[in-house]
Image 1 (cartoon, rainbow, N blue to C red):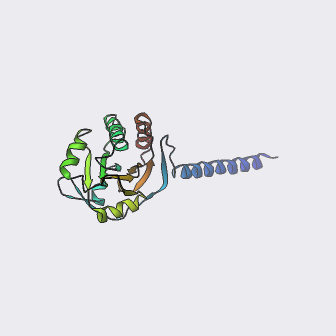
Image 2: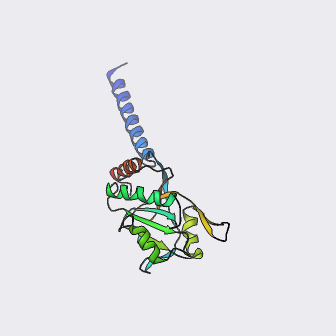
Image 3: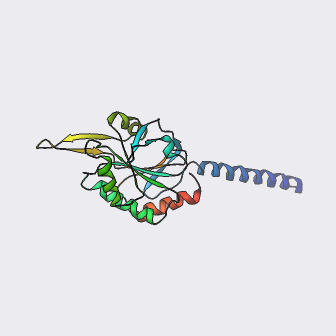
Length: 203
């Protein structure tokens, strides 16, 4: 094999390696390994919705843009999952795992969760947590966009509870769903995942 042929093979090999590296990088950009959640290969655009924050101001897609958001559905009478998750999010927030991120708690029980009740409830965890509420019709578009459920279950004696998705949703700076985290949650793992997201500059 002469020198010219060797050089040609070297060039072809180099081009193949470069193409492979570019392809790997492109494919790698579509996913991000997380310990406690799943990164979506393509961010999901949310349908328009209109709820209210605790001051009565409109809370819709515009309030989700410009910063990352950790969003969670729940209700103040939730016996375990909701307070446990909010306590964990308080730890994650203190760890500054994802700079600039806001935590949004959307009640799925507006009948009992007034703005005043939510303010007291969330304030016990963090003054920075954002409470959001709206009636069933107003909640429907957001629940559907995130493939979340909220079902009222009647209890003996005429009271009721709410069955709901316990998923934690990560939205990017465009207000699109980019990752989901499922319980059981651990503050250390979620902190590590969010730091990985921040370092990768995916939001």
